[in-house]
Amino acid sequence: MKSSASSPAEVQLDKVIFSYGEGVFSFDVTCRAGHVTAIMGPSGSGKSTLLNLVAGFEKPASGHILIGNRNVTHDSPARRPVSMVFQENNLFAHLNVEQNVGLGRSPSLRLTKADHAAIIDALARTGLEAKNKRLPGELSGGERQRVALARVLVRERPVLLLDEPFASLGPALREDMLDLVAALQKERAMTVLFVTHQPEDAQRISHDMIFIETGHVVAQGPVQDFFSKAGPEAFQRYIGTQQAG
Ligand SMILES: Nc1ncnc2c1ncn2[C@@H]1O[C@H](COP(=O)(O)OP(=O)(O)OP(=O)(O)O)[C@@H](O)[C@H]1O
Image 1 (cartoon, helix red, strand yellow):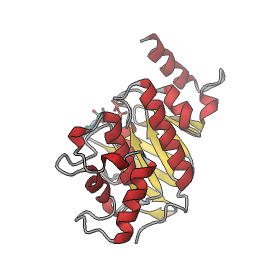
Image 2 (tube, protein in one colour):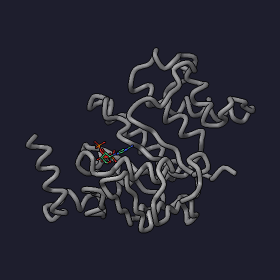
Image 3 (cartoon, protein in one colour):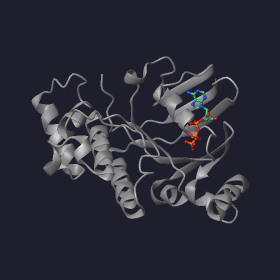
Image 4 (cartoon, helix red, strand yellow):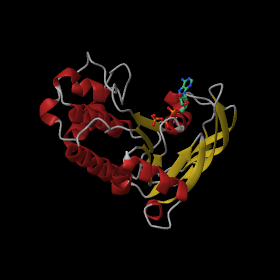
Protein backbone atom coordinates (compact mmCIF):
# COMPACT_ATOMS: atom_id res chain seq x y z
CA MET A 1 0.00 0.00 0.00
CA LYS A 2 1.23 3.47 -0.84
CA SER A 3 1.67 5.75 2.18
CA SER A 4 -0.04 9.05 1.64
CA ALA A 5 2.26 12.04 1.44
CA SER A 6 -0.53 14.03 3.08
CA SER A 7 0.04 12.49 6.52
CA PRO A 8 3.34 13.82 7.87
CA ALA A 9 5.63 11.15 9.30
CA GLU A 10 8.18 11.53 12.08
CA VAL A 11 11.55 9.86 11.44
CA GLN A 12 13.18 8.31 14.48
CA LEU A 13 16.51 6.57 14.89
CA ASP A 14 16.03 4.87 18.25
CA LYS A 15 19.37 3.95 19.87
CA VAL A 16 20.74 2.91 16.49
CA ILE A 17 24.23 1.44 16.45
CA PHE A 18 25.99 0.72 13.17
CA SER A 19 29.53 -0.02 12.08
CA TYR A 20 31.44 -0.45 8.83
CA GLY A 21 34.18 -2.20 10.76
CA GLU A 22 36.38 0.46 12.30
CA GLY A 23 34.22 3.51 12.94
CA VAL A 24 31.11 3.12 15.08
CA PHE A 25 28.03 5.24 14.45
CA SER A 26 25.42 5.75 17.13
CA PHE A 27 22.29 7.73 16.38
CA ASP A 28 19.49 8.41 18.83
CA VAL A 29 17.55 11.21 17.23
CA THR A 30 14.10 12.24 16.00
CA CYS A 31 13.25 14.42 12.99
CA ARG A 32 9.96 16.31 13.23
CA ALA A 33 7.10 15.24 10.98
CA GLY A 34 6.38 17.61 8.11
CA HIS A 35 9.54 19.66 8.70
CA VAL A 36 12.92 20.03 7.00
CA THR A 37 15.90 18.89 9.08
CA ALA A 38 19.35 19.83 7.79
CA ILE A 39 22.11 17.36 8.53
CA MET A 40 25.54 18.90 8.68
CA GLY A 41 28.98 17.84 9.84
CA PRO A 42 32.53 17.37 8.63
CA SER A 43 33.33 15.10 5.71
CA GLY A 44 33.25 11.45 6.83
CA SER A 45 31.24 12.19 10.00
CA GLY A 46 28.35 9.92 8.96
CA LYS A 47 25.72 12.12 7.30
CA SER A 48 25.16 9.80 4.31
CA THR A 49 25.29 6.82 6.66
CA LEU A 50 22.41 8.28 8.67
CA LEU A 51 20.34 8.71 5.49
CA ASN A 52 21.27 5.20 4.29
CA LEU A 53 20.05 3.75 7.59
CA VAL A 54 16.70 5.53 7.18
CA ALA A 55 16.45 4.46 3.53
CA GLY A 56 17.32 0.85 4.40
CA PHE A 57 20.53 0.62 2.36
CA GLU A 58 22.29 -0.12 5.65
CA LYS A 59 20.95 -2.15 8.59
CA PRO A 60 21.62 -1.23 12.24
CA ALA A 61 23.51 -3.70 14.42
CA SER A 62 21.03 -2.73 17.15
CA GLY A 63 18.25 -0.21 17.72
CA HIS A 64 15.27 0.67 15.56
CA ILE A 65 14.27 2.93 12.70
CA LEU A 66 10.72 4.24 12.99
CA ILE A 67 8.91 6.18 10.27
CA GLY A 68 5.53 7.60 11.24
CA ASN A 69 5.66 5.33 14.31
CA ARG A 70 6.03 2.26 12.09
CA ASN A 71 9.05 0.09 12.82
CA VAL A 72 10.76 -0.26 9.41
CA THR A 73 14.08 -1.62 10.73
CA HIS A 74 13.67 -4.91 8.91
CA ASP A 75 11.89 -3.58 5.81
CA SER A 76 13.70 -3.51 2.45
CA PRO A 77 14.34 -0.04 0.94
CA ALA A 78 11.47 -0.51 -1.54
CA ARG A 79 8.98 -1.08 1.28
CA ARG A 80 9.95 2.03 3.22
CA PRO A 81 7.81 5.17 2.84
CA VAL A 82 10.83 7.11 1.59
CA SER A 83 12.21 8.74 -1.58
CA MET A 84 15.85 9.68 -1.96
CA VAL A 85 17.71 12.09 -4.24
CA PHE A 86 21.49 11.89 -4.55
CA GLN A 87 24.04 14.39 -5.85
CA GLU A 88 23.99 12.63 -9.24
CA ASN A 89 23.12 9.39 -11.03
CA ASN A 90 19.47 9.56 -10.05
CA LEU A 91 18.31 8.79 -13.59
CA PHE A 92 18.54 5.93 -16.08
CA ALA A 93 20.50 7.20 -19.09
CA HIS A 94 18.53 5.15 -21.65
CA LEU A 95 15.11 6.30 -20.48
CA ASN A 96 13.59 9.66 -21.35
CA VAL A 97 12.38 12.21 -18.80
CA GLU A 98 8.79 10.96 -18.77
CA GLN A 99 9.91 7.35 -18.32
CA ASN A 100 12.37 8.24 -15.56
CA VAL A 101 9.55 9.99 -13.71
CA GLY A 102 7.20 7.07 -14.44
CA LEU A 103 9.54 4.71 -12.59
CA GLY A 104 8.35 6.43 -9.42
CA ARG A 105 4.91 4.92 -10.10
CA SER A 106 5.81 1.55 -11.58
CA PRO A 107 9.26 -0.06 -11.87
CA SER A 108 8.04 -1.92 -15.00
CA LEU A 109 6.55 1.29 -16.46
CA ARG A 110 3.12 -0.32 -16.73
CA LEU A 111 1.30 2.93 -16.23
CA THR A 112 -2.40 3.60 -15.79
CA LYS A 113 -4.24 6.71 -16.95
CA ALA A 114 -4.02 8.05 -13.41
CA ASP A 115 -0.25 7.46 -13.41
CA HIS A 116 0.11 9.36 -16.70
CA ALA A 117 -1.92 12.24 -15.28
CA ALA A 118 0.30 12.32 -12.16
CA ILE A 119 3.44 12.34 -14.34
CA ILE A 120 2.16 15.22 -16.48
CA ASP A 121 1.32 17.13 -13.30
CA ALA A 122 4.77 16.51 -11.79
CA LEU A 123 6.51 17.60 -15.02
CA ALA A 124 4.49 20.82 -15.03
CA ARG A 125 5.24 21.42 -11.34
CA THR A 126 8.99 21.10 -11.98
CA GLY A 127 8.97 23.07 -15.26
CA LEU A 128 9.84 20.12 -17.50
CA GLU A 129 6.75 19.79 -19.73
CA ALA A 130 8.62 20.77 -22.89
CA LYS A 131 11.49 18.36 -22.20
CA ASN A 132 9.48 15.22 -21.48
CA LYS A 133 10.96 13.19 -24.35
CA ARG A 134 14.61 14.11 -23.76
CA LEU A 135 17.20 11.68 -22.48
CA PRO A 136 19.12 12.64 -19.29
CA GLY A 137 22.25 13.26 -21.39
CA GLU A 138 20.37 16.02 -23.22
CA LEU A 139 19.59 17.91 -20.00
CA SER A 140 21.56 20.30 -17.78
CA GLY A 141 22.59 19.22 -14.27
CA GLY A 142 19.79 21.32 -12.76
CA GLU A 143 17.20 19.85 -15.13
CA ARG A 144 18.29 16.32 -14.24
CA GLN A 145 17.71 17.10 -10.56
CA ARG A 146 14.28 18.49 -11.46
CA VAL A 147 13.47 15.13 -13.06
CA ALA A 148 14.52 13.41 -9.82
CA LEU A 149 12.20 15.77 -7.89
CA ALA A 150 9.34 15.10 -10.33
CA ARG A 151 9.80 11.39 -9.58
CA VAL A 152 9.63 12.15 -5.85
CA LEU A 153 6.29 13.85 -6.47
CA VAL A 154 4.72 10.89 -8.29
CA ARG A 155 6.01 8.43 -5.67
CA GLU A 156 3.97 10.20 -2.99
CA ARG A 157 6.08 9.02 -0.07
CA PRO A 158 5.90 11.09 3.12
CA VAL A 159 9.68 11.17 3.70
CA LEU A 160 12.28 12.70 1.38
CA LEU A 161 16.00 12.10 1.88
CA LEU A 162 18.28 14.57 0.09
CA ASP A 163 21.99 13.71 -0.02
CA GLU A 164 23.69 16.91 -1.23
CA PRO A 165 21.40 16.99 -4.27
CA PHE A 166 22.46 20.41 -5.53
CA ALA A 167 26.13 20.42 -4.54
CA SER A 168 27.35 20.49 -8.13
CA LEU A 169 25.12 23.39 -9.19
CA GLY A 170 26.08 27.09 -9.20
CA PRO A 171 24.74 29.36 -6.42
CA ALA A 172 21.81 30.96 -8.32
CA LEU A 173 20.55 27.65 -9.67
CA ARG A 174 21.01 26.05 -6.25
CA GLU A 175 18.79 28.71 -4.73
CA ASP A 176 16.10 28.06 -7.37
CA MET A 177 16.25 24.34 -6.67
CA LEU A 178 16.11 24.84 -2.91
CA ASP A 179 13.07 27.08 -3.30
CA LEU A 180 11.43 24.38 -5.43
CA VAL A 181 12.14 21.78 -2.73
CA ALA A 182 10.74 24.10 -0.06
CA ALA A 183 7.56 24.65 -2.10
CA LEU A 184 7.06 20.93 -2.76
CA GLN A 185 7.80 20.09 0.88
CA LYS A 186 5.17 22.55 2.06
CA GLU A 187 2.60 21.46 -0.51
CA ARG A 188 2.96 17.77 0.40
CA ALA A 189 3.86 18.21 4.10
CA MET A 190 6.85 15.94 3.55
CA THR A 191 9.41 15.23 6.23
CA VAL A 192 12.74 16.12 4.63
CA LEU A 193 16.22 15.14 5.83
CA PHE A 194 18.66 17.32 3.95
CA VAL A 195 22.40 16.63 3.96
CA THR A 196 24.39 19.68 2.97
CA HIS A 197 27.82 21.25 3.43
CA GLN A 198 26.43 24.75 2.79
CA PRO A 199 25.28 26.62 5.92
CA GLU A 200 23.33 29.10 3.76
CA ASP A 201 21.43 26.24 2.09
CA ALA A 202 20.51 24.81 5.48
CA GLN A 203 19.33 28.23 6.60
CA ARG A 204 17.31 28.80 3.44
CA ILE A 205 14.97 25.82 3.68
CA SER A 206 15.43 24.04 7.02
CA HIS A 207 13.46 24.29 10.23
CA ASP A 208 15.77 22.14 12.34
CA MET A 209 19.39 21.07 12.30
CA ILE A 210 21.31 17.98 13.32
CA PHE A 211 25.07 18.38 13.60
CA ILE A 212 27.18 15.21 13.46
CA GLU A 213 30.79 14.54 14.38
CA THR A 214 32.55 11.16 14.17
CA GLY A 215 29.35 9.14 13.96
CA HIS A 216 27.42 10.90 16.74
CA VAL A 217 24.87 13.69 16.90
CA VAL A 218 26.55 16.44 18.91
CA ALA A 219 23.88 19.12 18.56
CA GLN A 220 20.25 19.32 17.49
CA GLY A 221 17.63 22.08 17.51
CA PRO A 222 15.93 24.87 15.57
CA VAL A 223 18.13 25.97 12.68
CA GLN A 224 18.17 29.65 13.74
CA ASP A 225 19.71 28.69 17.11
CA PHE A 226 22.74 27.28 15.32
CA PHE A 227 23.47 30.58 13.65
CA SER A 228 23.08 32.76 16.74
CA LYS A 229 26.17 33.76 18.73
CA ALA A 230 25.10 31.34 21.45
CA GLY A 231 24.88 28.46 18.92
CA PRO A 232 26.48 25.07 19.58
CA GLU A 233 30.22 25.44 19.93
CA ALA A 234 31.05 22.44 17.69
CA PHE A 235 28.96 23.92 14.87
CA GLN A 236 30.46 27.40 15.25
CA ARG A 237 33.91 25.84 15.07
CA TYR A 238 32.90 23.89 11.94
CA ILE A 239 31.54 26.86 10.00
CA GLY A 240 34.48 28.96 11.19
CA THR A 241 36.85 26.39 9.72
CA GLN A 242 34.85 26.23 6.49
CA GLN A 243 34.83 30.00 6.07
CA ALA A 244 38.54 30.21 6.86
CA GLY A 245 39.17 27.48 4.28
N1 LIG B 1 30.47 1.21 2.19
C1 LIG B 1 31.37 1.60 3.12
N2 LIG B 1 32.30 0.72 3.61
C2 LIG B 1 33.20 1.08 4.55
N3 LIG B 1 33.26 2.34 5.06
C3 LIG B 1 32.38 3.25 4.61
C4 LIG B 1 31.39 2.94 3.62
N4 LIG B 1 30.66 4.04 3.36
C5 LIG B 1 31.17 5.00 4.17
N5 LIG B 1 32.19 4.55 4.90
C6 LIG B 1 32.98 5.31 5.89
O1 LIG B 1 32.09 5.75 6.92
C7 LIG B 1 32.39 7.08 7.31
C8 LIG B 1 31.16 7.97 7.15
O2 LIG B 1 30.86 8.06 5.77
P1 LIG B 1 29.64 8.96 5.24
O3 LIG B 1 29.58 8.81 3.77
O4 LIG B 1 28.43 8.67 6.03
O5 LIG B 1 30.16 10.43 5.65
P2 LIG B 1 29.58 11.86 5.25
O6 LIG B 1 29.47 12.63 6.52
O7 LIG B 1 28.34 11.72 4.44
O8 LIG B 1 30.79 12.43 4.38
P3 LIG B 1 30.85 13.46 3.13
O9 LIG B 1 30.47 14.81 3.70
O10 LIG B 1 32.30 13.43 2.73
O11 LIG B 1 29.91 12.97 2.08
C9 LIG B 1 33.59 7.51 6.47
O12 LIG B 1 34.75 7.33 7.23
C10 LIG B 1 33.56 6.57 5.29
O13 LIG B 1 34.86 6.34 4.80
